[in-house]
Amino acid sequence: MSAVADTIAHRFNFPENMEKLMFPSRTGDSRESGNKGISSIPADILDTPKGIIFYLDVPGLSKSDIQVTVEDENTLVIKSGGKRKREEAEEEGCKYIRLERKAPQKLMRKFRLPENANVSAITAKCENGVLTVVVEKLPPPPKPKTVEVAIA
Image (tube, rainbow, N blue to C red; front, side, top):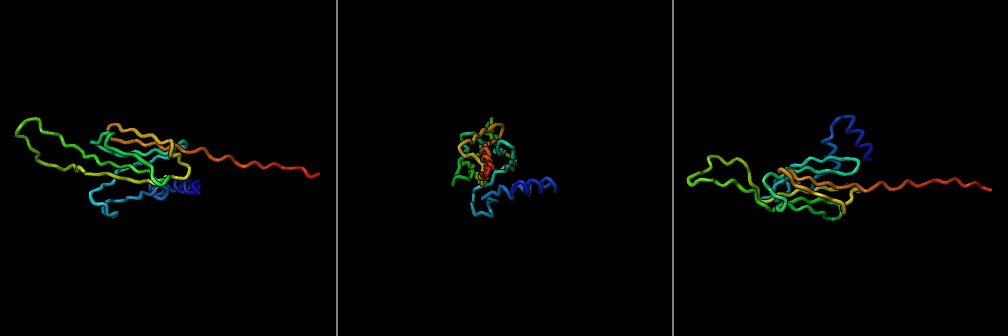
């Protein structure tokens, strides 16, 4: 069925909608899910022949603030209890005139992984405020052979 979905997505040029159908997030907007104080992490998902790559914006967080786990054998969970740090004023008597950038207490996002995801082969790296999580795909199962046997 994924081949049909890929064909439809390519034909009608709406990969964003197909991505939402194929990889729905289990935590939407924090207001909808009832998780007060927990913000959702914006993400881009790239499906490649060898794996699925998640790109998540985590500005101001270090890799020690971020936790990547797999729950229920097929749910990728990315969360952070870390707090973004504000720049300290270098001189005494300095104060902020405007504070527009939010500093959420907690970030969390869950993704349901496809059946062919190899959950034991997940890698993650955090560089320049972008967390990149790579989930390798399992090789396709071998096709059954049909052997014709001559009847004597």
